[in-house]
Image (cartoon, rainbow, N blue to C red; front, side, top):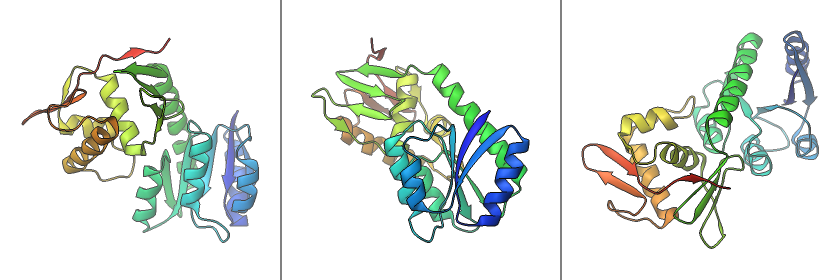
Length: 234
């Protein structure tokens, strides 16, 4: 049975989702405020979090960042107000896995939950959990990048997806359209220019500046190539 942790300050929504999702073989633990979520979420034995961003006592975006920092692999679906694209984009950049805009049909949410869990299982099965390249260690389960000297290098959600795409396709020249397809988060309207900016930021964190970088090379008119020697750790 899928176990969900729901945070929403609307009692009617909590009751509706607990009842509906139970009918679809999902167990829901419902919380009403951010304080309860901060107490419960770190150790709750759940498969997924349903997180309302509009809360009276806390910032939903801050809660998203906080729980992803503590439990990077725990999927988070945001419940957002209709017509609030900025919060949706920020939430996805902070690591949320999907969003559902209110008002929504409970059956749509159930479908989104199943899709997010399937996607996570597929990624885990297809990707080596930890890889090393050029002295760097990239732990994708923890979403953690370690420099050769052991220092932790913080990655945004976009940088994490980009580096994952590069190590999965090391040696291949990837066009910007291909990188968009590999890295675009649900609900985010990205452009080829956003790929260039993400590559630039990632190069900076890898100490790999310029088009002729050691790890990420620019091929004019074609795209980018990651040419570090990638191997599983172990």
